[in-house]
Image 1 (cartoon, rainbow, N blue to C red):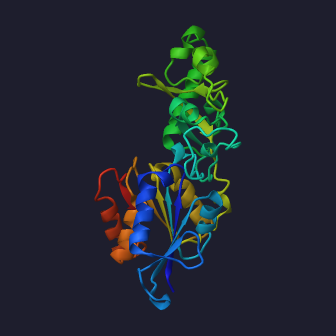
Image 2: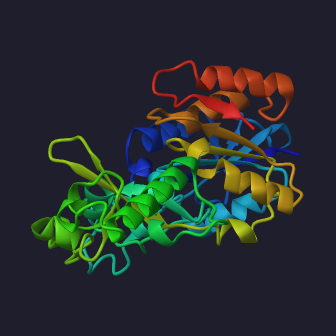
Image 3: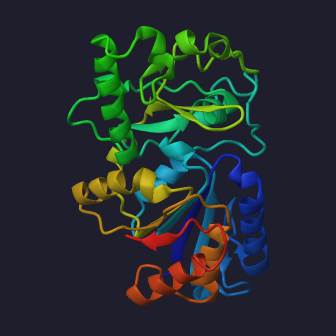
Length: 321
């Protein structure tokens, strides 16, 4: 029986280098599957009995979720991590700020939830840039059982300490806006910036807090937003392998995925990146599995696949877990 591989291409990535390289590889090395819209068989020119692999490319959250629940297949997500908010999908050609007529719901703000309770994100580079308004996660009220990534847990502790100092008047109210680590309101500290209105008519910074200022020109602000794992919690993770080919996927998603793997008694293995990545991971994965014949879940095969994936610049340093 042919090994099935499902590749889920995320918003924007489907339209640029990664998505283009993937479709070119499939056209050059595989045959379109008869009766299918977006599926191919390998090797090219093989008879039905000679097909060793079937590759399907999908572009929606529902299809990605279905793939995770399909027994014994390999699943690749090639797209944005969205700062840990989760995989995001959209039609081809979706702009960075989609217009409200074509996109009543902004796809940049719709995710497959598979993360921590919250994540940090950039106020300008994400919220304003894509005109998204995710629910805020108040660092000053996070409880002792909050499931947070290490960096955000530290930020929460700092925010609480600074809030306590401000209330005790150890830090003057007038100095609160310039107090590093404090949970600060844009409306108070950057009133003009808080009124920034996007092309969709959103004001992503109005009524929102930030806890850190990045030394950029112009400055960037970090806030925390709610994420959770509502979609992952429903998954059986029946797939044999999940390759999260997105930036810093191990940082953003490994612990939630591992928790679900244990709860579901799944044997699924994870290929994940440790840092920012910007290369054609899905295509390279297919080259190793289809052409080189490596089994990515065997000890020897996974070692070869990981070595190849990390053999290019901007790989994000892939490893298997």
